[in-house]
Amino acid sequence: MTLTLYNTLTRRQEPFETVEAGKVKMYYCGVTVYDYCHLGHARACIVWDVVRRYLQFIGYEVRYIQNFTDIDDKILNRACVEHSSMEAVADRFIKAYFEDMARLGIKEADEYPRATHTMNGIQRLIHELENKGFAYPADGDVYYAVRQFAEYGKLSGRKLEDMQAGKSDRVNIEDPEYQKKKDPFDFALWKAARPGEPSWESPWGAGRPGWHIECSAMVRDRLGDTIDIHAGGADLIFPHHENEIAQSEAVTGKPLARYWLHNGMVKVDGEKMSKSLGNFTTIRDLLDRGVDPMAVRLFVLTAQYRTPIDFTDEAIAAATNGWHTIKEGLLFGYQYGKKLGWGVGTASLLAETVERFQETVNNDFNFPGGLTVLFELAKELRREGNIIVHEGKTETSPDELQRQWHTLLTLAGVLGLEAEIEAETQTSNGLSDAEIEAKIQQRQEARKGKNFAESDRIRNELQAEGITLIDSRDGTRWHRN
Image 1 (cartoon, rainbow, N blue to C red):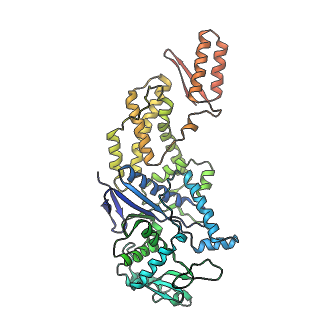
Image 2 (image 1 turned 180 degrees about the vertical axis):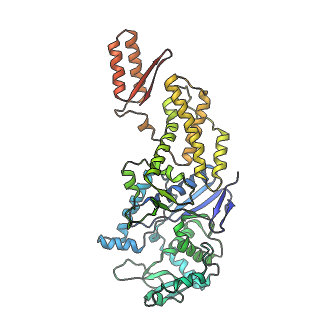
Image 3 (image 1 turned 45 degrees about the vertical axis):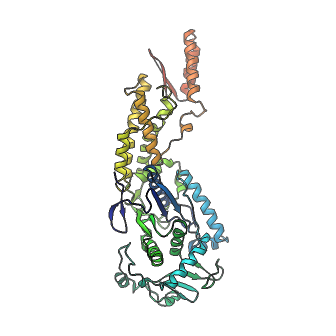
């Protein structure tokens, strides 16, 4: 069962082979911190979170780095509007990022480098590009000479001559930046300081880095010259990732990444999500409306990660129903394990089920196919739970059920799907399973003493709390409504 991945760089699916056996160096282009994270960010972060979890599940040691872009015109514009500072705006929305991702069950990366904390590495990389003839200074700015890099366009498939034909009528020759460039396609590595903006001293004068050089420097500083996986949204393929390759590989002479992976975009009711269209939804707005975070994860994972996904009320409702099914399966052991006489020890996994899950997901991270395996397990456990409630016994042996449940817990954990045990196994007034069982025992004693009024009182009390009792020759069973 070999893991194969679709590589944007080669445009084909390839066997996954790491630079160092058993280890994965993975970098995800994170968010620009000038606003709250939206549904597009939710999809990307969930996808790469699950990719990391799965790689660890199949035995890799993963070092996962995710950056924050904390120098950007959008951040500066927001700071100006709020009469604040770039640092204050960035800090506020980085804090909000962690709050939102925690609600979605996103595991934290191993490190979160920030552009402002990587200034030495950025300047060092620009200096090396200049020495190798790939960069040139111009009145306090520094530009990358695109035509010096013969492989420019290899990631996106774009050719300079084709872009030249379409760009000529959009160039403003009066633009001061255009006049500084030797070629219209050259892009800024360093920008000279403007009045009122934060800046850093450099060999080219006070200024700040361009966007693309930041990621090249952070990858190199944290993970080295060549990494295994460089991930991000499809909207970053050009120009951001294309420019990263040009910058990094011009200096090192080595591939920046073995595999370039890109997640598809999120649409809302068939349209591109944007503030101008009024369909811009933040993660916190969605969750504050009462949508279960696990339903959001499930919604994301039901689509192949590279394809666009359409966020609609119907889609999130379907995901919510799907999550209820999986959640019932996840809670099975907590509700019925004691009755089934399960021991404290961990049960073994169902080898064939795990193998089928892995074989499916190994096909370019086919998480929708992996979910199919989870639904099969969850539905079977739900069916057995209903039989326990209504008949007081199961059709499957307790040991086999324990293995099914443990397999479901394990595979759901790979996808980051987790049920809140305490909240689901207590009633609104805090009655635990043990407390319910104690009341049932009190009722049994009342019936034995022919105190039927007390027996009825206890039944009615439990019924008011959403607990239904079912009496039979084998005893009294109960379930939550």
